[in-house]
Length: 373
Image 1 (cartoon, rainbow, N blue to C red):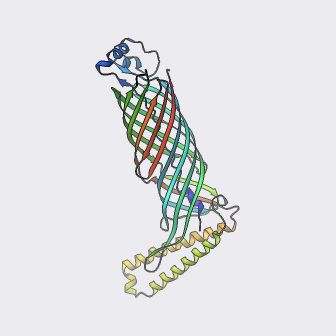
Image 2: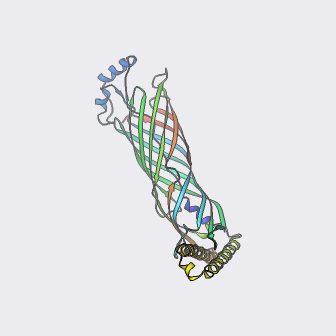
């Protein structure tokens, strides 16, 4: 049976790290003494950051205190699914962890967001996030049942893809410091993503440490920065939702696959019962045999009950609904990132960043405009 409804079990993995590479830089070196001396006597013209004038007069060069950036973000990531429960028409939900095996669960997202930010303190940037995303999730999985010898086999499989839309809101902070053009940034943000197929917004926390170096050009205020770092994401594990069955389950061929699955469950149940009845009382009392019998019965009962529920839902597919709950986590918490930024002047910056390694791949590009506040 092709259970497209299970596409929901690979939740949108829409989370990002959108640190804009500007920072308060300590001016050092003999060739920069004139700049340092000018900062020490120059009156700082803006209200932010707090203590901006004091820090500038100690030889630090500050970026403009406010900015806004537009970011495009693409990401693809594997997810691990557990505690999977599915029900139909607001009836009982069935835990399918024992019988459903995911060969792959891949979520991808294309997103555009706006990021306003301010330097609250000379070494602390605070920002907001507002974005829209189009997402897709691809599932390859199967339903497995045991036989009398405790050998598990797949009775049906499904492979499907579904598309969703999402809106994201959140905020973040970036403690950062620079000395002589070298810098360290520790970006952190929290987002809540409203996916149209979920009951509640999905929460994600992202941590992105980076270390980099800025190289000046001859043109004043123009430079290029390069960096390396890491990307870590934590997702809130629990997800619940409800959909119309007709929206996610193709009806063509579904009934035949359900009937075939029920037939295989019945055959295996008969084989398990015959094996058990062939044992002597002493053999049935053996803990190993009893455990094998109970495990097989539980799996076969779950598969039969679930397939029967699907069979009933198919009879009224036009009005049937699917309810689900699950826990999910990224297959890999961390991946590696490399990036670069071209600063045309202190107002305009262009940035690109690529993340890879493990089971997650991502790309970010953005344009930023900064101004004094």
